[in-house]
Length: 272
Image (cartoon, helix red, strand yellow):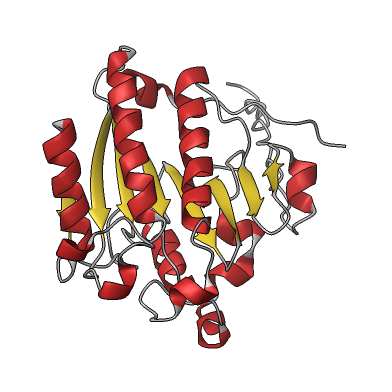
């Protein structure tokens, strides 16, 4: 039986700014970003050199149905979500974060990020993020939800090596299969009846779990667990341990190391 793992946060994240990209500034994203600003401030107060440098991607504008359920107000209607939240945080917290009013696609270059946080509501968007991170060395924190349940999964791209943390697509391939979007009955962040069909609390609940995971990583220098399931209907929160046997229950097997054999020494020819 495999033993639980210890996973240390890379030294570059403890000795320099965290380069963070947040994809999606809607339901969960608008809840994650203020928490990320609080984490940035706390890191600086505790002596971290740089805190968080953040870039936010979202090409959507605030609609009337977003008000109240997401982090927006009536006067925000019509404005770009990413620009609105980033400008607000920069003014209140003195940060210099960036907003990009565009989508992330498979051609986007996110490889330099230490951490990408996905707050998207489609499988196609989640797949595009993972494709843009094929050669990345940072973490991918997926924040996804259904009507009243969801998951926070911390993983890494294959380029990191065999001892990497499996990402959401490794553990749950169906969540990165765009074919599922056509039959998905979960309301998107722009549906007029979203408030009647989706819990008003679920986005905040997911954001809290993501915030706690990142705070723990900073305070301890280690990843405490590889994910969390949240179910509001039962009131349960269940962590996914850093344990290959736990990952195996979802169908993911840790790649075995290929040991390199030392080259055989050749005998010198006679007479040499």
